[in-house]
Amino acid sequence: MEFVIQKQQKEAERVYIEAEGVKRAQEIIDASLTDRLLQYNQIQVMKSLVTSPNTKVIVTDGKTPMILGQ
Image 1: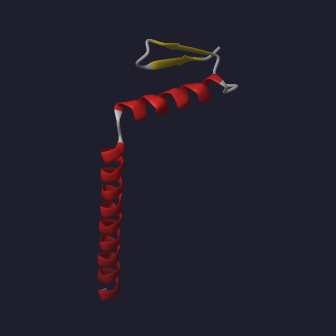
Image 2: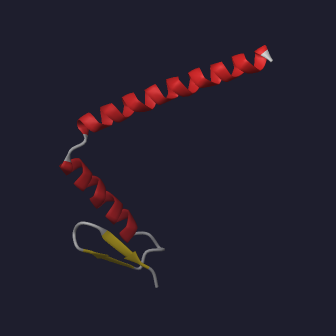
């Protein structure tokens, strides 16, 4: 029984450490995220959609794309 408790405690510590790492990574990303970078990434995604054989038509209002199939 003691082994099971220790195993669960170690797993809880692992999950906590992982969550701390994710939190730090998100803080770093958030600090460098700008509207221009987001716009650039959106353009790159749109370019990849245009060249995709599965995408037929892209209709957009400049804000949110709507992808239509056949």
